[in-house]
Length: 97
Image (cartoon, rainbow, N blue to C red; front, side, top):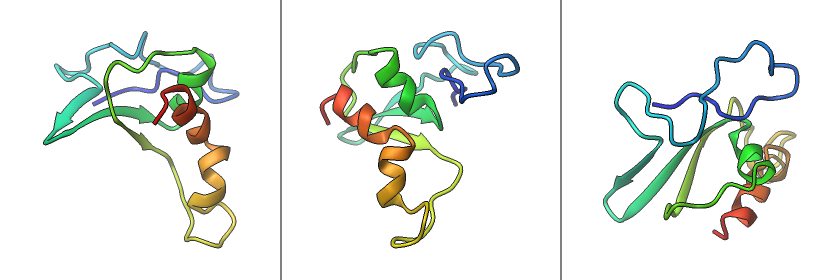
């Protein structure tokens, strides 16, 4: 469970965003462990927020980002181009994955 903490352009005034990346939603943290992996839940533009807000990685080793749409490999909007377009490359670099 997690709400967006970093708004996309144009939604700053009408987004019920989380106050911080540590906000608890319905009793759940956005950072959780499954077997040996520690995940950080991001929602769409949150990947830009990791870099823009210079957030520190608190021990996670995977960002699980819910992005609206990825097209098949080789098509416009595929994972290849979206890696940079959706801020995933910047988040990865900020958290040194």
